[in-house]
Image (cartoon, rainbow, N blue to C red; front, side):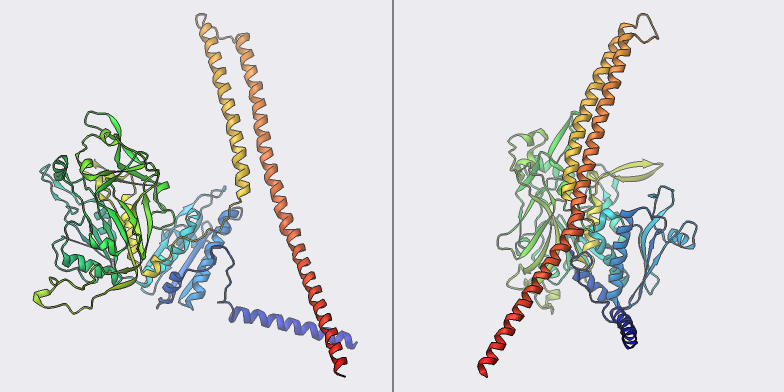
Length: 633
């Protein structure tokens, strides 16, 4: 009776202890996390933590996911769980500033109407035809809204960046200010070659729809104050005063994107000068050296693989080695500027590289193919026919950088301080000279032509209205750069993260081998099919004079032979697929055995050995102690 009472009391105490530990864990230990994944996919980057810490007013997050409608879609549900997990991480770190709601927009429900009202995208993955939602709506205290219409699993690497960007925009709702310094007619105006008025360049029109844009000439005395992003387009012979201000702007934490070019050939007035070998290039002189960047302004990149096909004056189609189409393989898929782009067109690119003594890091955004060569700008400018560029072309078998992001520590290009000419009304400026900066962030593009309309949009007249249809991502690249640079340094520091799904390399290898065998069999079948059809055609031609509709014995034999052969090859194809499934199943069984049986057994054996080791050591120490005590007695 006494033992039963002690057992009951012990169970009650254990229950109370369990509930107490759960309560303590939920209330006090919930902020503590240990992320053991390889790429820390369940942890937020330092930049995201800084953005969350800077939130001073509540932000409401509504995560819409069609939970019931996607019950048979394992992959999508796993990714939705990944999204919800990272949203919970934001909420936990915000200390109550972020309020998360998870809503299931079932068909014909109030939540579905709400999702449509917010403009979320519905996808029809479900075989039953039900709409699938997986989007996010964020609202701040001023009722400003930002929406991620649909979390695309293919963009998983930038999941954290998308959410952090959305939070940053809601916590810093001021309009982004962009200043563009250029002497090119990007705002449109009279065209001296045609005598007509040209519209603004398409990239500028896009920027004006998103940001507060101010366009300035290179003759300005001082940079505008309170600008978020400074854009330089084809800077030629800038004054020391302006170069110094750009230098100090970057060192003070300002964000810069610069388009420089060894030869800007889209200038129609420069075409005549180019025929005489006159170069129409641009550079930033001492600033590039202070940023640890080398720019070869005397040579143009030719690329036999990336060259675009153009129509010559005599109507021929030929490849232009100086007009390049940069495809996905040459774009940096790890940077948010270029990860989701497909094609960027340009002309007469220059080459960027990192200086040997650079303290900055140069990360390529656009690269040539390895089948490239460099040509002197003076010779390139004289080349009228595209075919002339292929003469003497020798591949370097090494890609060069055409656009790059530059980050890191940098010193001022003006080691002696402010130029004497930089004084308003003859009086010195009060701001202190910045000699060094810990972390600059800028984007350099070694081409200006990619901004010109003809390289990325096609204009058509629709009932008197000009419609611009992009066929390349040049405008998207500029927008991405401005959007990324206009964020805080914390947002810019967030790059692509790891993915939730891990590939099975061995399984992929087995699939590749089987698919190769499948393609070989398919080619055999297609070849035999072509031969049989040819035989049937010959037989039909032979009977053409009689106009007979009766199938001859020869035709019937050919058809029967083909059918038998087709059945035989299809059977072998099924065997290939069956063997593939068996190999994958066998590998899966091995993994299950390793995870379920082998790993626990190894762990048990290790624990047993450790227990024996500790017991043996304790026994030896005990015997030594007894012997020492006896010796002392």
